[in-house]
Structure formats: C-alpha cells, structure tokens
Image: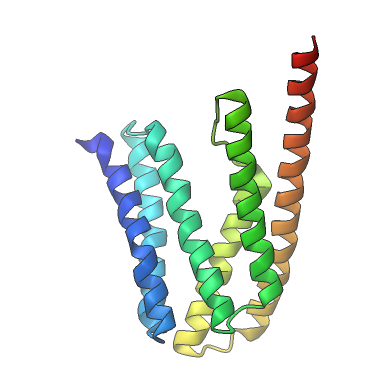
Length: 185
C-alpha cells in the first residue's frame, strides 16, 4: 500500500491545478497562495516517502513532474492573463515546456525508450519558477512590497528558462546525430 502513496499524492496535486487556477481567476489569491504552498509541501512529502520507503515507481517518475509542470504552466498562463507576469516571460516558459514535451515524445517515437532525467539547469529553472510564483501570489494576496524581488526573479526565470531550453536542444541534437550515425552503419 505504501508504494502507492507517492502516486496518490501526485494525483492529488494534479487535481489541485484547476482549483488553484479558479482561485486566481476569481481573485481568491490568498487561497491560491496557500493551495500552491500545500502543493509544494505535498511534492516534498511524496518525494520523501518514495525515497525513504523505497516506494518509487515508473508511473511516479512521470506523474510527479507532470503534476509540477501542470501547476506551474497553468499558473504562469493565468498570471499573464491577470497581468501578474509579463507575457514574453510566460510565452518563453510555456514554449520551453512544450518544446521539451515534444522532444521527449519524438525521442520516444524514434528510439522506443524514454528516461526522465532532468538536467541540473532544468531543476534550477523549476525551483526559480516555484519561488517566482510564490512571490507573485504572496504579493497579490498580501501586498508585501515584493515588486523588486518579483522583477529580479522574472529576469532569473527568463535566463534559466532560456538556458534550460538551449541545453535540451544541444543534448537532443547530439543524441540525434548519434542515432543517425548508428543507422548509417
């Protein structure tokens, strides 16, 4: 039973996405902030349980990052809609994630295998996106005077998003060359 707990937590986090978006759209920003915090805590808890009790699974390896990305992408999009975030940053974030998803699907189609191993820059990028979204929601919900911090984080997210996207393109280009060379010999 314990082996399924991390996956159940990830599914719950995934199911929270529409609710947090609804909260933001209807200006229940404090509720959205706390649901976002709860999602972050649940991410840490499911990871701890999976590692501590050897309850990792192939499904969990896909489900956990899917829940994280669904929450972040949805909040970035609604953040642009509500003018909490600059459109160009949101376009960059969403494009990078779509490119990674498309690249992974293409790689799987060609090789019939796929391993989910995020690059270090991608982990940094996700962490900074989470901090930015927490700051955005906290500022809108509690008016804490975090505009300067938010602006700095937007630049950092933009830079890490670009660097991460470029790193994946380079990695996949090298893999594509290797695959093409293998097929020629």
